[in-house]
Image (tube, rainbow, N blue to C red; front, side, top):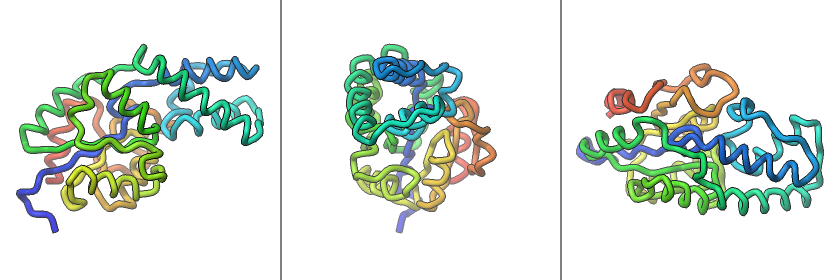
Length: 225
């Protein structure tokens, strides 16, 4: 059982939460789709397509164009997507305003940080390194780290454990229905940003708190622990 003196662990989603990665992800998507003879996808569609990982992004983009490919072809597209994406992973991706300052403020309270994303672990770590914040996180969990993806709560629970935290002193910070469902299943509070990747206003999915800028995160988190 956690004690009041135990540090609070903040587990962040990555794409659409910590960083705006739409430019690089959608640019990679267009590269692969054109290579396969399909159309490009408007950047305006990013909010509806992103958030569940690269394979899901390809599937959603194909469905949007009423295209169907064999599982083998999809896996080939997915493999090439990962290679191309790593080559441009931070060309257009940036941390959202206030992320570093929020981490500083929470760390002063004794907070510890981790990442639990549906991005594959290798590019997730590479992106955070390129953005200069990888060393801020005690553990970085990708879709393939434990072989389970959100909204299954197990990657979140395993991330909490791997980061040395306790479920009773953890908060999920995300941007989507998936993050909210994951946190609910893990029975931890969830704070969401309203500027991330979601096809509907994220407030409609019933998070505990919604913030519009990272400078609001310390006060929102303080309501729980």
